[in-house]
Image 1 (cartoon, rainbow, N blue to C red):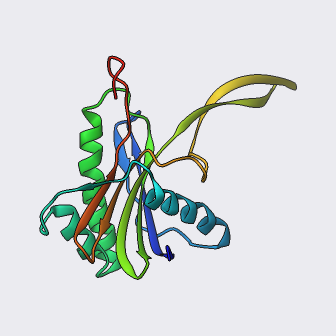
Image 2 (cartoon, one colour; image 1 turned 45 degrees about the vertical axis):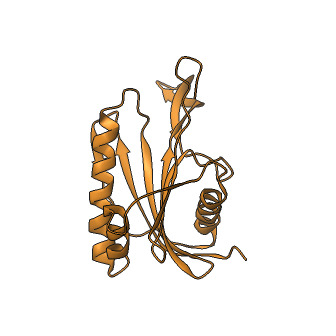
Length: 180
């Protein structure tokens, strides 16, 4: 069947460049335009070919935290901040970590409750800037950080099935000495 219904989304920003987490206290406005992007991202996470089930106990902290998050909006915000801080602290140990957004989506897939956490890595792209200075136009190329396109594959995510207490992981594949 594969029906996915998104109930709410919250996004926090992990700024490794300036060494801070920027937490959000408001949920994403799921309007027609934004929902198209988030639907695509959540769908890509569920369909990822490298989605692996992790063997964890029923009392794993991400399972318990996910169940707590859906009880109230306040719990959702508080627990997502704790998870974001933990992942940020881990990311600080890794060199060259890109700035990213961490998206928390509470959704139902085929009638089962899921918490989907997707790391949206910013991509560095060149952009042309036109600046006016002393009645002269200056054209220069600069770097800008942009979120990945909706159709881009999901590189890193955690999916929690709160009905079956299953935890799934999408991990980024990195070549080290020519091996994955």
